[in-house]
Image (cartoon, rainbow, N blue to C red; front, side, top):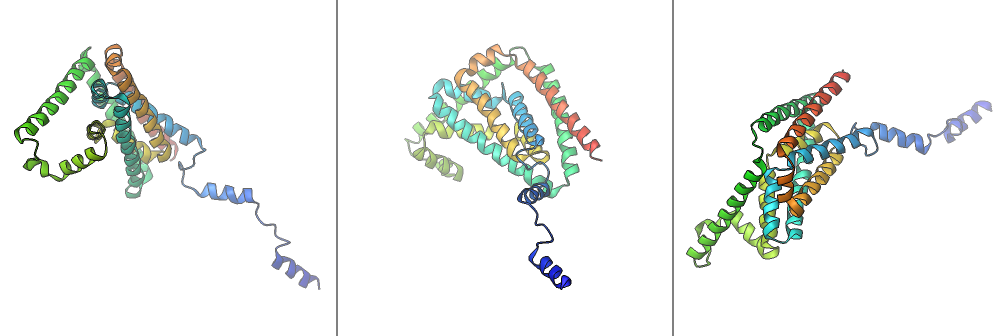
Length: 275
């Protein structure tokens, strides 16, 4: 009879306590890949790293100056919304590429490549800062202004020569998409979006976002990148010319170089400690 009672107890689960919900939740959280949780210290470190990298990379950059010039000629809100749309899209795409990278390479190889790229960027920025003139930001601002003015003059001349009708070169796929977008959206929005997106593609900040997302929490890396871009773009739109003339881009470049080198060394130390 005791044996039968013991068997029934085991069958109904009375003798073996069921795991508590907190135990089950803890098991689920512990089974997640490292760096994906939103409540661990690595997540906040990923946010801070991405935010600081974007901040020191974008101040005085060509994208910064393009948005500055566009805001001086067009409504600031339209320029800001267009630039941030392009930069947010770029940040999300870069983070997605960073997520896909560990699927092709091991985590240790990805971290080593990230550390190597940070060190290379840091050394390159030191060289750029050393060769940079004291008024480099003002000179580049003038170059960007002349470049944008030349593009506008060229488009105006083409339209006058063709009598307002599309010529053969305007039949390309990219031009057709741009013209369609300008019918739906503001031409200033489309122009700012295209200029910003193309200027950021392959830039140091995009590559940094990719390697950070590969080595750290991709969600917080993308969020930090968007926040960093929003501050830089807001500064460029509201008073980019004043910022470019008052802040030493050479000093910012040196600070950025030190930050990149520090991230590279820190990543190598983390890699060594995991052995």
